[in-house]
Amino acid sequence: MDRKKFLFVSEDALISDIAWQVVKEGHDAKYYIGCPDDKESANGFVPKVDDWKKEVDWADIIVFDDVLGFGAKADKLRKAGKKVVGGTPYTDRLEDERSFGQDELKRHGVSIIPYQEFKNFDEAIAYVHQHPDEYVIKPSGETQNIKGMLFVGMEKDGADVIRILDAYKRVWKKNVVVQLQRKVAGVEVAVGAFFNGKKFIYPINVNFEHKKLFPGNIGPSTGEMGTSMFWSAPNRIFNQTLKKMEATLAQEGYIGYIDLNCIVNSAGIYPLEFTSRFGYPTISIQQEGISMPISEFLFKLASGDDFEFKTKKGFQIGIRIVVPPFPFSDKRMFDIYSKDAVIVFKTKNLEGVHIEDVKLENEQWMVTGSSGVSLIIVGTGLTMKQTIEQTYSRVKNILIPNMYYRTDIGERWFEDSDKLHTWGYLRES
Image (cartoon, rainbow, N blue to C red; front, side, top):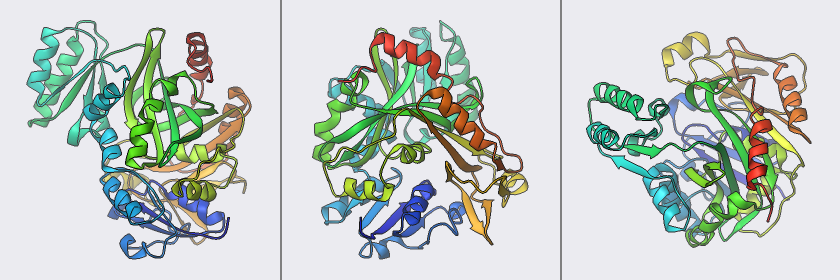
């Protein structure tokens, strides 16, 4: 592909790694970051701009990395004739408004888990008293991204959910939209695919997120600690969920990646939530598995090309290396323990190394931002065992003061795969 001009637009510096990959592939890039605390991310790796709107005419392709109202901007630019990877107001709502996403799935003929949404905690508490059961508490509306509010009930009569809701009521002291979803046991698995404005392009991606902070899936929920994945032809999970959205996404002209996290068991597939954008660190792991330059891939996608892309056989794993205060927001703690922490590589081998909130000064990699996410280490292999071994061997090459990471990413596969194959969900069609 000829040299192209890429403009990356971000609020929270999520797309730094892909922007860096595009630069390494020989293209021109400009990177806008809105959040003041994150503006140093990717310094020394990608050229920066202070006003992305002034660069629109310069760019051959524009990439938006999140929802956050970017869907309306991406949609407007596409309609003006620009090549854009990004959402629409509709696809933003699929992710931002949990209940809307569930209602849209139901409208498209996809089975969903029964849920109720409440405008205050008293209503939710009364509902559990009247309908005792195991529930999952999910924040919705403006509080949707507050991971600490997510709670998975364990008691059959919902007593633990009532206690948590009552505690939230005392802490929040204001009306908060909250969703109660009936708890369903099974394997948690996500299925996703790229959309070119007209149709899904194949293969699809099957991935397993690891959101809890500590090994064994315990501790506080995080944005993500690591993900394992593989590529597949359309399978039963995809055909019974995302595939049913294809005509609507085409009507919207959506261009980008869309992912649906599900619980599956012997009785059926139960979608939990949409991610109508790139996932992080998912897109960095996917980049390692796509057998073509990511710059060419993005340009073809934004151009609406109908193409089937080649991927590596086997599996990919990405492990997030973090520092304090992750997963919490505490600027004072970050400044004390992590600000400008050096990143040292025991050997100069950078295979599988992907950046998050990192900057380069005087040829030295350093942690920046305020969230505590630093690197994603990715490995690939023909078997999950080989992939795990390669990924963790690469982690051992990293030295950052106070760094931590999960040591069990990928291990769920050995049990989950047996169930998924037994139930027939991974069968290609």
